[in-house]
Amino acid sequence: MWGESAKEAADIALATTRRRGASYGDVRIVTIRNQEIRAEDRRIERISDSESCGIGVRVIADGAWGFAATSNVSPAAAEAVATSAVVVGRASASLRKGPPVLLAEEPPHRNRFATPREKNPFEIAIERKVEILLTAHDGILKVAGVKKAHSFLRFKRETKTFANTEGSFLELDVLTSACGLRATAIEGGDAQTRKYEPPTLNHGFEVVERADLLANASRVGAEAVEKLRARPSPSEPMDLILLPSHLWLTVHESVGHTTELDRVLGMEESLSGGSFATLDRLGQLRYGSPLIHFRALNARPGLLASTGYDDDGVECQDWDIVRDGILVGYTTNREVAPAMGERRSRGSCRADSWASIPILRMPNLCLMPGRERISLEDLIADTRHAILIEGDGSFSIDQKRVNFQFGGDAFWEIRDGKRVGMLRDVTYHGITPEFWNSCDAVCDEREWQPYGALNCGKGDPMQVAQMTTGSAPARFRGVQVRRAE
Image 1 (cartoon, rainbow, N blue to C red):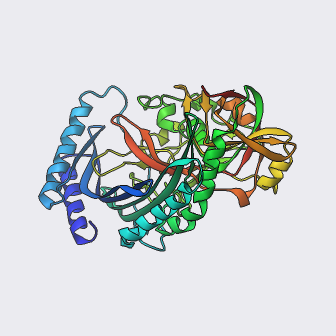
Image 2: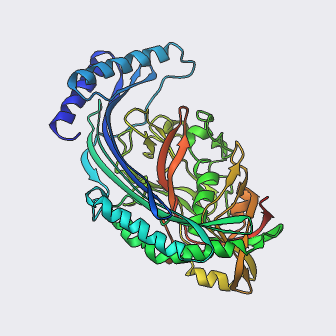
Image 3: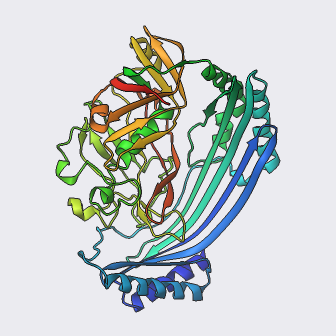
């Protein structure tokens, strides 16, 4: 809902918040379209195509947040939902025990933003999308020993009008595309699965075309069969080489959530717990070795949290969180930034729909490439004995983000600088700072890849968000490895 109708509804909502006595108000008018196609073996399992539109109004009334939303986007509904938001804010204020909500400063913005795209996936015929998936399945199922094939295409477009009582008016258009394959091999009462899920990006249908599912189909099938016959994981300290398709999840869980400032402050612990990286350790905690540089890249085009502006109306930015191995920053929104003495938010406040109140969300938190020119093959050649891990798998981490275990999708043993065969059922265990301090090599920018999540859960009630967690391959020394049972 763009143009004059959206502006009229926004103006009415904001005027109502002022008239009702709110000290701050913002409105989001959002349309979200989702399309997903899933295939199983030689048939299409499901095609879904849905659209949702509504208005969400957020206010500060008597020092407390109030929020209300409606799927009715008429001018009358805009006034009614704004009135409800103020009522909720005043009710919340009557129970407030802490200080009033005070927002970090942010200049007003008036702008339009759209994520990059070459081809609009919603203009590509369903028949073409089905053909891509089923043709790839032919390649998977031709591999002897493979019994099941699954694949998907997923597209999301979110158009949003944002306005607030400070004078901002923004029109945003975020398009996201994803795809993937999965092959399952069965032999002797055992089953093993191998998947191929290339980086998901805020781009158009070109994401699918560049992924070339057909070209990867037989490889995925053959590796699923190879996993069936692979040797089991050792149980001892081992060196690890972790690829970006795997490392993204380790970064996401042990660094990304850990450095969300609302979690650090104890404001958000209902889902995924708190954080050991407390404010008193800022500038002092050795999070990792001097090679470790974690940087939020919310201004880099095409990454999943690069939305132009966040739902506080703050322009997306890049900033350091760990530099030279030392904790130097956090992820913030306008509410929590003052707690660490910063006058401006880092711009990472997002809601998963018009019906949800915006909350602090993880940015595009990325492990930056190493400064030394090292390719993946150089890294393997330099390694005497290790396990190389590709793809994500199971994981667990404690409520302070300290003790963890991660699995993966595929594992190769490295001996004397060469891959010598697949392993299976590998997990590794560690303590967050010890693990990141064990890193002794990070490949350069040629190997950097932007993997990430579409389904990161946070909050109560839970919201789902997307963000990129890019990296280059990296090596870690002496990590405890065990066989998954």
